[in-house]
Length: 115
Length: 111
Image 1 (cartoon, each protein chain N blue to C red):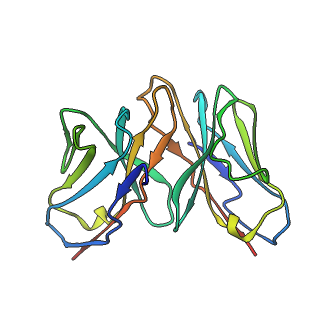
Image 2 (image 1 turned 90 degrees about the vertical axis):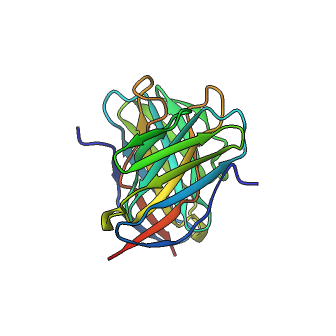
């Protein structure tokens, strides 16, 4: 299995621009998570999905952030408009219910820099 | 108070040393506990689960103390390759699948 695939790996953009991060979970996994990591705040959960349905989006910082999962093999995290404080590494992770509760497999991350 | 707290370190130890990390969690209803390892500029990876009775995986031993709400990780005979950040991870809600990560403890094993 190729694991969790994220793109882009690096993105540099200017304040005000729209940013779209993409994630392909491991085939067959029924949970998908978006986390953000910064030096100051560590790893923070933004949102997670179960069978493509958003379950908890309480970690989404504000309305500028949105996430979708149109099918079992694809999810996006969108920031519009982006701000310098959004600079972070964004990780997508997936897991399978019953395969060891809460064992997450992470993607390599998308490093976002907003100038 | 943070849900999961760890000493950020760094812990600088020589090869062959034994080193221990502790982590405290605030929600007494927490049910699942893990240690993840994160190498510099890489993604976190599961190191081991933590069971109530304590568990061992090679040179690594994890223990849980529910009464005091802390978990620990002991690494024996440290190797250079153990240098990484160790993340304490807790499931903090009944039926909630998402994990809460501590900020991590950095370990640097020196030759």
